[in-house]
Length: 282
Figure 1 (cartoon, rainbow, N blue to C red):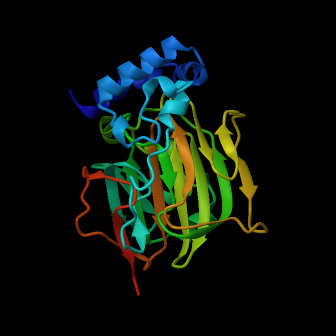
Figure 2: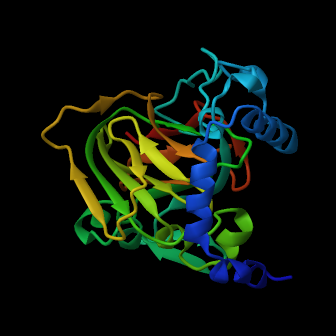
């Protein structure tokens, strides 16, 4: 079956309603039922609870609390690199931005302007720059960390669809990451501005940042824009910046001439938060 045929049911599924229902269930504190669901999930997806700060499945009051669990101290040492991987997961795609086009999959690309919610001036800062798209599977650690030190400038919540973001859907839905709901975080670092876009998906109940808390819900159906230039919100390399309540994808943008990717990186490769992502170009 072709990828386009495989994703056809997603066009008719009530994705928003399913996501709202999943969010309510994931936040519910249902005692033994919650523990049973977590136990099933751990077994089904092979979650490594040995590295969790709290390895006791019964110690989580809700599924969300389990899903966003912190890790033990030292579980993700930071590599000696200018840019580190911000998440556990797999590399979907990475490389050069072709003027303003980001490669999604064979036959599919989307624009930086679309990704950041229509702000052409912001997108222009990444013309011919670099991008990385990182996919988090259900078994992964779902906190998101800083790839390098940065000062927060802006956050944009862009309403959109809630397609799945797995590799099949990435190959079958044009412009997937610029169609789905997303939270676009803009920072200024030593090598210039950079963007971390947290992309939602079917049953991703919400996304949160450390400076704002839960961003969605609410979902008012319009773009929301927060400015932080007048605040001194700085986050160090490896510091937590956000989390997914259920899993999804992070898309990062860097300006031209700022980043040389780790030569060991390749699409489909498994990654861990803290490993070397690349070096700053002198």
